[in-house]
Image 1 (cartoon, each protein chain N blue to C red):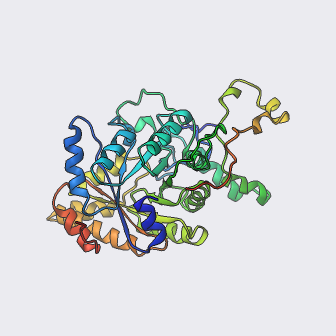
Image 2: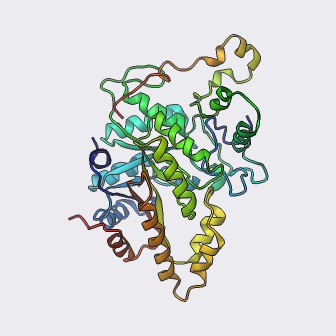
Image 3: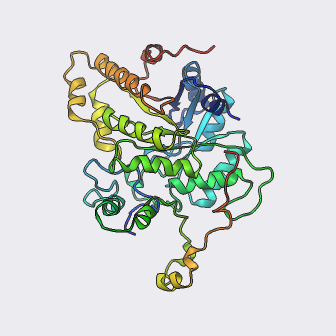
Amino acid sequence: MSALQEKLENTKETVFTAEFPSIDGAGMDKVVKNAERLAPWFDAVNATDNPAAHAHASNTSTAIAIKMHGLEPIMQIVCRDKNRLAIQADMMGAALHGIQNISLLTGDDVTAGDEPEARRVFDVDGPQAINIARILTTGKYLSGRKINPAPEFYISAVENSSAPPFDYRIQRALKKHQAGARYLQLQISYHPDRLEAFCTGVAKIAPALHLIPTIVLVKSAKPMDFMNEKVPGIDIPKDMINRVASASDQSAEAYQLTVDLAKHALTLPGVRGLHVTDFRHDDSLASFMHELGRKPRN
Amino acid sequence: MTCPKTLRNGPCGGVRENGNCEVKPEMQCVWLKAYDRTIFLPLPKVWKDHYNDLRPPVDMQLQGTSSWINLITKRDQQTPAGWSVQDGNH
């Protein structure tokens, strides 16, 4: 059982996860630097799989590097770039290296990235990939071929609480739970009302499904504008962007907005923790975590 | 199926604020359109509930064959042997 699973399933403690930065040219030095920065605060970190349809060091290699440096990885597997054989190979590759936390996503389309001319795969979609991960844990490949012993996974997924059709998103969370997901990391939401309606609804129909909303630390209104314009499925209300843009100290205002959103999210039904994406890359992470009641680990 | 991402299990997380597709901004999300129809069309509930079923991966061997014949022969209901196994240690 992974430490993350132990904490989510057998305790009531709040869990904090983080996005591990993508690795390009800087090699293991960058892995070490980020692992040292994140390790005191986070229970596990996401090893992403070509996020926003941009190529980087692979999900499996990043997850292994994270594990080597003492942090627990949550290895994402995205359906955009791999067919069902490659997806199962990723899962068994994770198992080979003792990586148990795997997160299955449909993934942004290739048009969201810098190589829009690429072939999109989507041989399976997010809910199907979740079911395939669960099938592997029964000791079988999708084909029925035996795996002995069966790999152990702690399966999760991602859902967007704040994209249309809003009321259906609750049903979709249940679908992913029934397919095999034990917790959901939620897409960034700048709509506290939508997030609240989603979490309340999910807690009613899937009470065993743990929810981990995402919070993004930014320094100014500019990255908020970027996310609003460029990132599929993210909408940021104009008055929220203006609140930061019109402040005399944008950095302080953006920080306070994030704290407000985080504290609200932690009060919602079914919410067991937060996922933090840090675009500030400054010393505010420590004060942010302190404000949320998290003490650093040794 | 006109979803540009060929998804089979409902709308992805990329649906735009106006309900349009992530890939084709000028087109309404086909899964959102289907969802709206489950609400306003006077269909039996058992049909409407199919929207929430977990649909299996597409059998690519059937590409280019007649969907009517596959429907009648139930060839289109065949799934890989592992698809329907239950439980596991997840």
